[in-house]
Image (cartoon, rainbow, N blue to C red):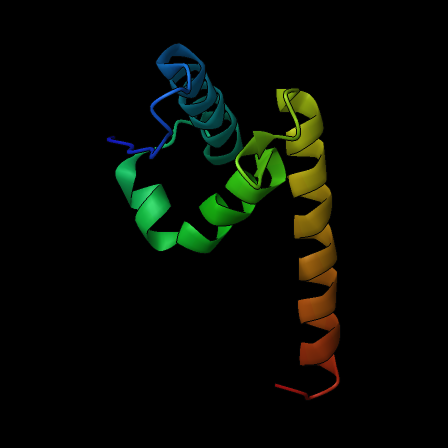
Length: 91
């Protein structure tokens, strides 16, 4: 996989590489051995994971376990909402 990041000339490149590495580790745990197809077919989930970790260019969650916990609880909430709407005939 390839990732691109736009940074200011004064930013530390090693920190950016560390953030990308951290993001890939969370993706790997979430998707169980992430590959390009996971990102292609679940791009909305990959963006959600990125938004849980980085807001406004700043790392908000550095713990992989806490990030995965938030993402999993959001998945449960979205699934329960989806199936609730499906059961009511709304669509």
